[in-house]
Amino acid sequence: MATRWGICGTGVISNDFCAAISSHPAEEHQIVAVAARDLNRAKTFAAKFEIPTAYGSYQELVQDPNIDIVYIGTIHTTHTSISLLCLNAGKPVLCEKPMCLTIDDVKEVLSLAKEKNLFFMEAVWSRCFPLYDEIRRQLDGGHMGKPLVVMASFVLPILDIARVGEKRLGGGGLMDIGSYTVQAANLVFKEMPEKITVEGALSEEGVDSCACIILRYSDNRMASLVYHTQAMIENTDVPLPERAKKLDSNTFTIIGTKGQIRVDSPFWCPTKMSGPSGIKEFPLPKMKYPVNLINSEGLYYEAGCVGECLKKGLKECPKMTHTDSEIIHTIMADILKQLGVDYTGVAANI
Image 1 (tube, rainbow, N blue to C red):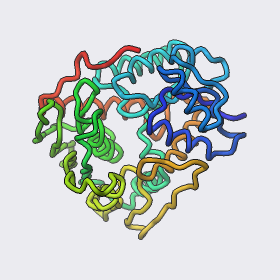
Image 2: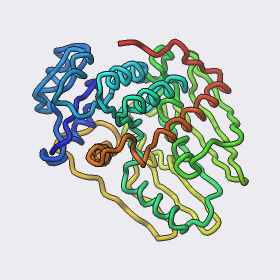
Image 3: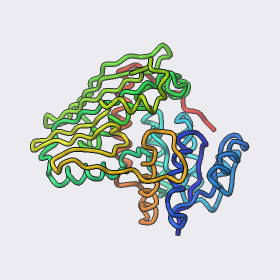
């Protein structure tokens, strides 16, 4: 039986995720409903993807008995309230990252998912790429020896995008791109660091524009993470995706006692790596509809992964567990505190 999806939000990322779902066989995945706060926008989106039902509120969507799981692709100031709405209505959830703006909200959502015995996953899509599966295999198989160092860099000229530049919209570089570097360290070390050191800067609007982060783990293991939201900002004649493709320094490296793995740019949605087993490439799947963001074809893997979790009756995804989300957001909370960014009161109700 197909996994039946309900979609919250009709923006760019929801567009790309629906393109990914639609590229699966209909007997495996179907989109049965979409909701937006504007019914006409939902209807337009539904027509584009041949979705049978459109709603003008999220409250209506979660009451639809034909939905097996809800994908939340709205602006992240609303992620907490919509996640709670879905879970209280008995709906499993795949929520775009960041799942919440504060660690307290993260704990509340995860606690409710556990209480309701429902599947919940923070949609860190990187974790579902075949290349990340290969990293896990090489780490678990001891090909690297003992991992000692993680380095990740993510620079992208996005500060002038409204949702990134404005605090009231949950803006800031860490919430948008920096979190990918933190999840890279978590993928390898899987625990809280002993010490977090941060140097960064705030924009005029009071959100973080960049940071260099050092995570010191037990047994002299280290992670060096960098993100910046103002790289190549003057090349405005070149579309953002094209500028991003030229930033080949956006890589992720793991160094161990026996060797290293290097994930080529874009490391957060990668197709190529080198390591002890040589160079490996993982071509992206073909899409039924065009996508907007870099390598968004890879959302196909995330949809497939969630479908498999539901078929197995799992309540969390082994590739992106609740513990992973809590550790990552705890680290991010410390980083934001050191930078002087406080999202208390920013989360929006629906």
